[in-house]
Length: 438
Image 1 (cartoon, one colour):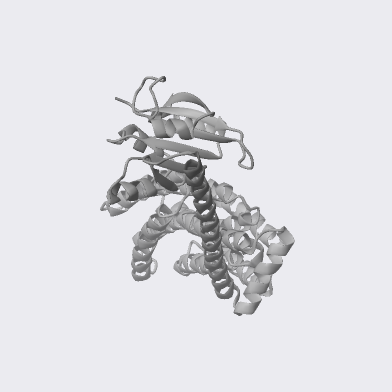
Image 2: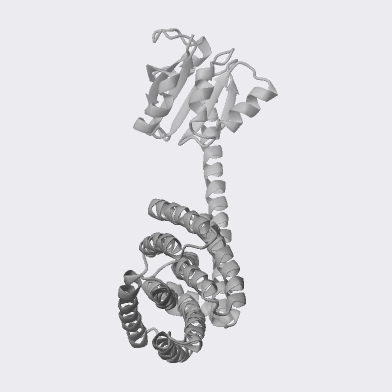
């Protein structure tokens, strides 16, 4: 039989208006209270409610105190109701009952009961004393929880601050005091806690790294086709085989790393499509003899999914400064795409490659000009952009010299040199203060 609960309030001073819940061992709202409890509650209006309604009624009426009468054997419905508060009821919780064994006391304390009194000898003064003990213990527990939460917050903030300092020190080559000064200045400027700024710095670095890795997939999709064509044409074939193995491992490593991040639903879906496209490209690369047209089609599919993944990550990052990492990273892909399409155009009747070649040249030049004009330019970045401009001119010379073996060799080597240059540039943007502190 489910126990019932009665709701009552009293209005004597100096105790404020208090709501009391009394467990009755009967579903009958008119069931008699034990004589001692009835005398202690004399003059207080009582309303009967069910155990299952305890949590809802406390939430609705927000009482200062709750009194429970626990009949023996104890109704499981009462325990179930108390479990909803996870040991931290929203008000003082007192209990009267027959004597309880140690196990019952432990269970009730774990459920959040603050004070207990025996039913024998209960009167109004002892009931008031019980409720006073319950209030005092709840206040003490609330203070301890507040103190514990503050300590956890401080420890958590210290963890984020230390990690952010380490990131800034590694990325910018500065000492601990300088790194802390950057974080403190940013916190003051943004009117945020130092821990909040530190966490944001780490999140920005994580998003920049994720965008960089996803962008690498674009470049690697084109490099793998270029290496296949390079091997078939006998252009630096040994080096092509080594780069092919390294590139395939890099694709898989980046996909596996991105899968460990909290990407959000758009990123998860885009990553799944990239994984599927990579499996198809890997299968096409394993076919002998190699079919360049089929390999190129699979690589274009991986390129499209990697592009969508990179854009999804940039959007999820929610920081405008991340765009520069994406723009610079895309140049790596274009350098490989140019070399790939130039080789395919010279080896296959591939009009698509010819058309893409001109379009990619225009896109590369436009992006390089944009990077040269962006205000996000440290001395390191300016020097790398100058090298990129020179490598770009050499790559164009390789495209024009495709009719000769030396020209084709120059093409593939210049494309790799340009990729290396933009790898360093992308890393510089990724670790720049403007991106990290965005």
